[in-house]
Image 1: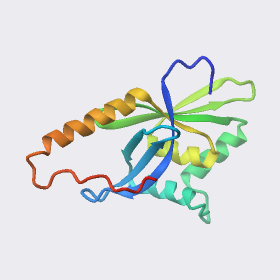
Image 2: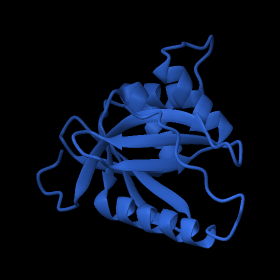
Image 3: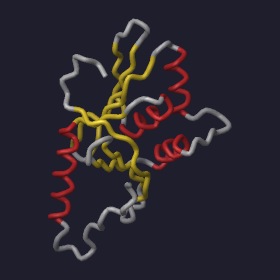
Image 4: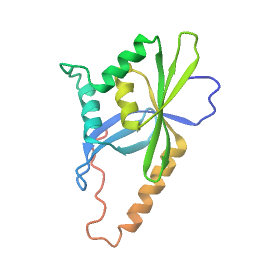
Amino acid sequence: MPKDDSRDLIEVKIGALIMDPNTNTPIVVLKGVGSEAVLPIWVGAFEANAIALEIEKIVPQRPMTHDLLRNVIIEFGLSAVRVVVTDLKDNTFYASIELSDENGELVTLDARPSDAIALALRLDCPIYVERHVLELSAASTQQQQDQDVGDPGGVDEWPELIG
């Protein structure tokens, strides 16, 4: 991790890839490494598939988009430093992919978290979440639960899939 980084980052790993039973949408659940942090991120079906293929180490016959991007990064002599989930605004997560060149110069790319995570898996680099994103997500979840109190459908409890 760069020494001049003043952000408060929490390292995470993929704790689970599950389906939201209410919306039938895939969720990547990021779990803190050495902490109790948990961050669910709803993702698209194609991105979830790209993540699942890499988790399962299934190699498609032809390179997928994330494989292509990994190959471009390597061919241009860049190395992955880390992926960071940087913000949460209007229920949308933001992320960055941090790469370094052969001179150690940092190159930062804006990305959707699902793409950044799929790429991090392929480049074997760590994934981090800025602490304020965890706080915003927790506040948003609490606000949604408060709104659903009178709703008999309510919010289901998270499945106990994270060990």
